Amino acid sequence: MAFTKLLQRITTGLSARSSMIEKPVNITHKLSSITVIHNRKEVVIERNQDPHSTIHDLFAKTSRPCPPFCVQPAKIAPKVETIAELEMIDYLQQSTKDDSILIIDSRIKEWVDVGTIPGTKNIPWTALSLDNKALSFTHIIAILVESFDVKIIKGVEPNELFEAFENKTLSEKLDFSEAKTLVLYCNGSWCGQTSKSILTLLELSYPAEKIKYYRDGMQGWLNLGLTTVSFKDSKPSCKLVK
Image 1 (spheres, rainbow, N blue to C red):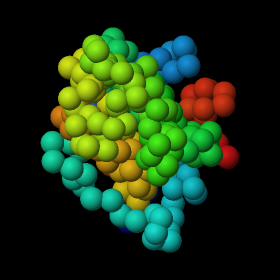
Image 2: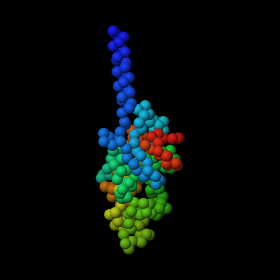
Image 3: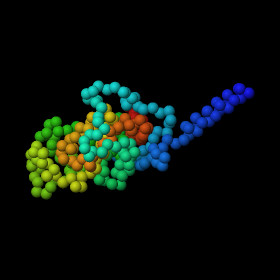
Image 4: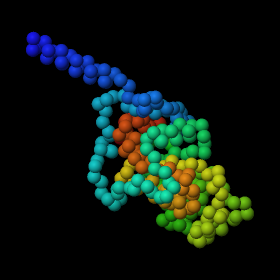
């Protein structure tokens, strides 16, 4: 009799475990996946369906030297909204139909080549760095105009912009009325690459309300088993490939 009960308990347990494994791993109760465009190809973003999957070793570390890998604040600056995964997914969905939204991977190429979030554009923080102001300023203005839809006010000469920046009057020379909403991310809460990009944009008078900060970045994205693509081949994957 005791053996029969034990057998029943084992069978029930195995059945429950099997049922659990067979259940889909959705993003939310009502959302299983979304489709975005990455490198002109459709990519489905979903969660890894393997319940035994673990995070990639590259993002498994708990302790990294600080600096440079220091914990970032939840609030970068006033009016800059910090978002999480569901908001990120919503912006990704919107960006497929609305080109006024741009999702930016702020990391340097070595990190991006390992894997990135589908539907995003790589503009590394180094491209927005003002460390060498005179040399980099013109290049950054070009990014604002060509990629972010910022306009130089009519009648303003290009050579006036740097002086305006130095005098903190750049907002009087640039038109941000049609500037894109930017959603930026990097490796996670221990990565300062996005923080640097955002602070540079604010220094250039970019409207704070048009900047969104996905603080958990790749660490948070991978922790939920969400799809990534290799920047080199754009083949969908739920794991980063070394």
